[in-house]
Image (cartoon, rainbow, N blue to C red):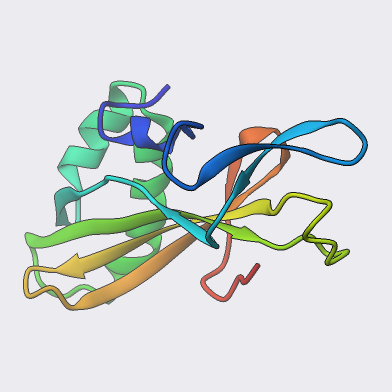
Length: 147
């Protein structure tokens, strides 16, 4: 279940750049003209407790729960200032070419979801990466994960 802000995670096949493609074996898949898809997402919260994400997670949003957990792991040990406001932006999906490099035959593979955290001055604090696993499930991954 997603909250109103996180509903942007549901891929909309009507977005610009996404199109239906028929592979040589007759299978119909979604393809994308770019290597990434920016989502309309902005979230403001306060460290170290992240009360907005906590409330949304308690209301049942799985992504807010996952995001809060990862942010607390990444930022709380490094943050000395109480009540520091952070902004979560640049939520995007990333695609990669298939490993067989037959771009004219096979669709690109959705591989990563990322989100940036910035402070009140707009300075990047961290970028979190989530591996997009088979079956549409997200799992936490390390900061140095690349497609």
